Each structure stands twice: as C-alpha cells, then as structure tokens.
Image 1 (cartoon, helix red, strand yellow):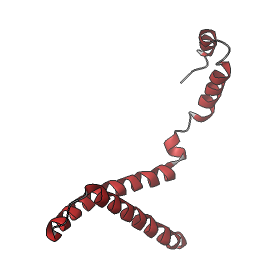
Image 2 (tube, one colour):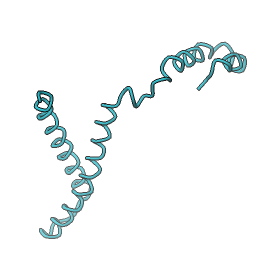
Image 3 (tube, one colour):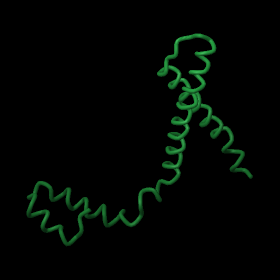
Length: 108
C-alpha cells in the first residue's frame, strides 16, 4: 500500500504516466482500507467457503463409496466420473436444501 508520504517519490520514479494510477491507489487505500474486505463481504465468503468444503468432502466420500460399489459390482472404477458426479449431486443437494429452507428460518 502507498502512503501519502511516499506519493511524491512514486511520481518522480515512475513519471507522469502512472500518476493517475498512484492517485487512485492512494484514494482507494484512504477510503476503503479501514474496513477489511472480509468484514464487508462476510456472507458471500461464508457461502463460498461452505460450498468449497461441501465439494471437497463430497469428492472424498464419493470416491470411497464409488470404489466400494465398483468392487462389489465388478465394474471398472473411473475416479473422474465418480468424483464429478458426487460433487455435482452434493452441491445441488446442499444448496437446494438451503434455498428451500431459508424462508422458513427467516419467518421464525
């Protein structure tokens, strides 16, 4: 981040081409640096993190269940198809349950 004290040094070093970019950075830092991004967008980050965790664990459990099922049925084991299907099904199921039930939690 650029402080106001170093603003003149940056304009001398980089020339007039980047003066607008430097002014923009200084204004941006002064205006928005007080509030961290994670505080302003907590809901979006929380939703993204929970979806990543769901996809991660669904791939792991899908691979385990797929390996056991392919061994029992004597079928070839394709880890890409099994992991992809498990991730998509879990992603749709978790977000579908959330979207269906979020209105009932808001009314209580």
